[in-house]
Image (spheres, helix red, strand yellow):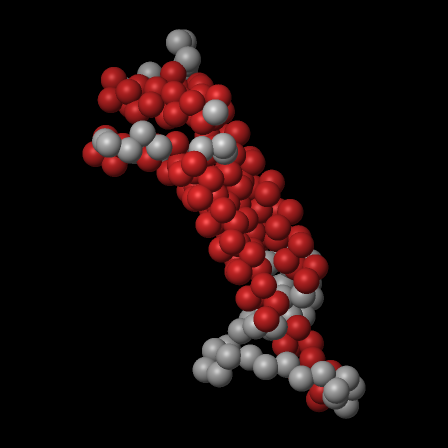
Length: 186
């Protein structure tokens, strides 16, 4: 993972704790969602019903889209928006659980993730199953991102690690590990 500039961490002991896992969660969830989308074909709801209407079927179903936008037609499963928003909420929940400020941050991200998920259905971009798949993948991506970053931080500050960090990196990494341990202890 990349380095955190000391000025970013100054005055905010959680900057390196949140930054690395959040970036990792976005990358992991994005790659995971896109790989699955390539492997599992399927039409998005608006395109499915558009084709059904052209064939003279399911004419009682009306689907509205946002005027002026051109949503994707295929590669629907899982919802990438849902995957990423749930992964970010999961990271904050794991790292800041049971802290007053962290609780509000986690709740805000979870509310945002629910709004994102429902908006994908409302805009006829995804089926409910796409949202469920995105949620499961997001939970796993967030958990994996935190574990990966914890493992990386442990390796960086463990004596005898194969890469010798600079004293500045050691200071930031020990802040990261200390903040992780404090978050886990509360």
